[in-house]
Length: 518
Ligand code: MSP
Image 1 (tube, rainbow, N blue to C red):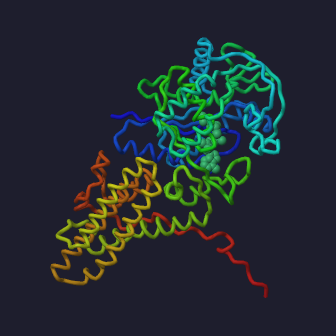
Image 2 (image 1 turned 135 degrees about the horizontal axis):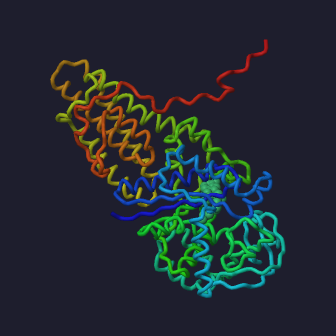
Image 3 (image 1 turned 135 degrees about the vertical axis):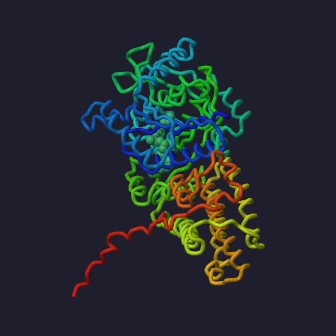
């Protein structure tokens, strides 16, 4: 069994989770579930990033100690996971002893090897990004870009990690591993970034300025820089689970690829003598009215509102169907409703209703065996084989949006098959030939439905389960075998009805129109 270790970024707990956070969990969950179905031994980690200036400042604002603040906020992030049907195996908080211990061990080891030194730094510092800045970070007019927030000039001693001496090694590594970063064009951006010389990385913050961090093991006057601390979560969470490290994929947003994940992290691992992950998946941003959804811009949508209204599967389906992994997508409720109505309610929901209704009406609720069909049946079957054979490689290559499009096309064609076959007409005929065709069409639509929902079950696990239940079907253990067209449903007793994707409630204004003035 192949070991497959996948992680999400760990979220800052200085505000509530929003759609961007939810998307990353859902995308990673879809990959994790897909790999489990493919037979891998999956370990799926997510968690929260609790140290640093931002969290300390948010706790102060609330007037409570940072640990208490983190305990409360982490609950909110953790609580989101079951609501989104996320199948994570572990959840890490960077304030846990298991994490702090590993961070301190790694720091001590690097210090002992001479990879870390103390030096005076004079220059500019962005509190928002918790980062020292260089002149090349300035706008052409000399001002600092908006993303850095308030920039102050400081002079202080700090511990530095010898990043620069590994620059050549990293370039060589990326050249030898051209698929380290997905999508590939992002790797080119990293190579561009590495054309300029790297500075050594300041990995400490004086306690006088920031208390909320992991103490440096070799100097109690300092705490660890939040990125050095946070990146190590991927390793600390599995340090006691032999055979799990290295990670297969780190799933992150494009904003934290360069430099933290694509430069600091590989160099940290290499310097510490640890194996490197297979790669990094950098997804794009959910935008609203042209701006990135985030806590700070105040346009963050609470994902739970949509999940409460439409259920986790509709939410998961939309996110995965709409976004091409790596690119940005605009979130609008209108677009959500278009997909919900046309793809889930009208296409999938309709096939479920038809299958249950007609099996009840024409076959006493028991799925008949298929008999000899004609070219209509043959062409649906061959479309199935093609759909499945394309679907799996698309998922392996993170092209989930296209994979779902193919699955939807198969459902559309199945509904078309029913239109053309018109079982309601066959049901009126006493001809044995028509009766045989009727039985075949009932078997065909049920089998097509079973197959389609087996195919998309990593995206819509609850829906697939519900549909299997109303089809009276218990799937076997080997997913790949479930995808072969056959007669597994013959003789199954179906339920009479299932409401899967109810019509959304109209907005309050429409539901209760204002009375006209007389
Ligand atoms: N704490 C760091 C990550 C440390 S990982 C060792 C951090 N946290 S965050 O809360 O700001 O972001 C967490 C993840 O959510 C990141 O991968 C980020 O890219 C993602 N998203 C935040 N807003 C987003 C959107 N609007 N759209 C999609 N994902 C975005 O960075």
